[in-house]
Image (cartoon, rainbow, N blue to C red; front, side, top):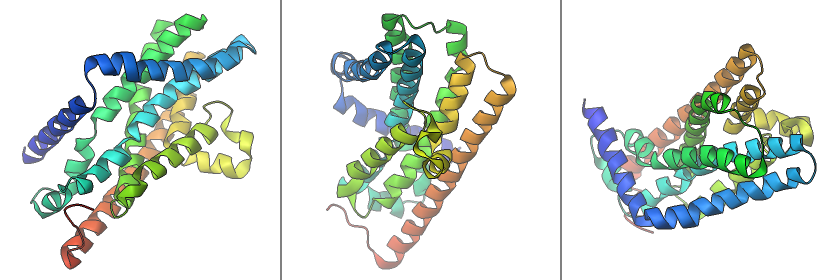
Length: 262
């Protein structure tokens, strides 16, 4: 009960921060249009080549928005130290991982809206056939991608808590790597066996493959296998994030290394 209350207050606190970043007008006519333009840009490259390429690039870049937004938690986790709230979180009876894992969930909600909206909107604009029934089956897969990427973002946020100036560098570098090797614009194996092996450890790869299989009407066994692999990757990253945060909490309480601001 207490944990649920902590999660609720953390989510509400994060949403309060988010409303200071955007109003509905600036989000809809600023940020969301920017997302649509990005997906449209890559999908239009395929439109110049063939209908199959258009569909491939549209789906890849639309689904990638789920991961891109979830990785923003890297920066928002580091904000806790810059704002001076991290020492209070560590000193409180609540487990820091509960607060930090709940604090940035709004990025997942935004990522879901942008991913699904850009898939349907840009698909309609370019005349790509995406049956609504199949798109709806992709909804739980999008949420799974968001959760697994969110876990990776938490880990990255924990790793940069002592170097908050690197928060955007790290998240942008990982985002670029995922966009390159996870099958967004070209198949994951296109960069060779090493990059392909790395891609198997990144959150987006299996989830995107599952979404493509659903939209292509592929076998349920393949979809289930990819979904299970995506979940396993997410659990592994979350376990790593919990371990790093526990270690940093122990060290901070031992040597007083957490400061209120940098």
